Image 1 (cartoon, helix red, strand yellow):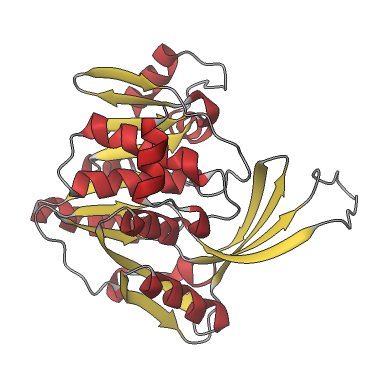
Image 2: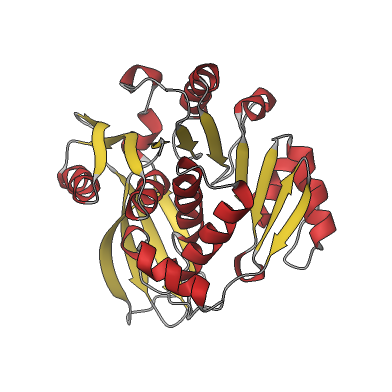
Length: 301
């Protein structure tokens, strides 16, 4: 089995659950608050590790209680956190997540994540490894890492979330691009909505320019576009509690299967089932499923 290396964000998620979201200027006082580990990078690393991969994490936190807690979480999940830099005088990233009726809205403060630079990277890519990144840390750092990964013969997965401006040349360093329908529309300029056909989504995916693009569509499932064609997979039935981290679960689960030399479509089916498990628990990192949970979901599909 190859290793998975995740370069990305680490956040403390401040989750507020309410029956509904407040309107502008309105105050709701019946909320329930939780402090849970998160950040797209950390979520993806934990997901891959729980599903059996050897995982290393690269990123930055502040020298504060949140940063210490998040590094402790990674170590407890058997993720190598030696590549997570604690930055003096900086704060750890925070995400305020409002959960209402099973859906979420997120406001983030990047903190140390925004300062993760190439000089902080202590790991060199190796042939056969799976390197994963998102857009919650600087694009320039991701581009540098992916260039080195490509040169070394590693495989690269880019989760284009949240969408930020990026140079077109970055996609030439990406083997698999993963994004949701909103991000797909933002990245390509295509008119993609929740009702867009598979053909329309596939056409937009091809405009992105990556060899393989996977569009995750929430309750509609996902669309996989490869040089060999288009495959649509339906979503699994789930009792939705909180959708936070479902996309991260998909990315981490996919990386774990690819690291085990599982073919892409089979790996995507597994990741699809894993993501459906993740929405049934509150929070991002805590909701990442075990192999037993994913196996049960696949059996009952």
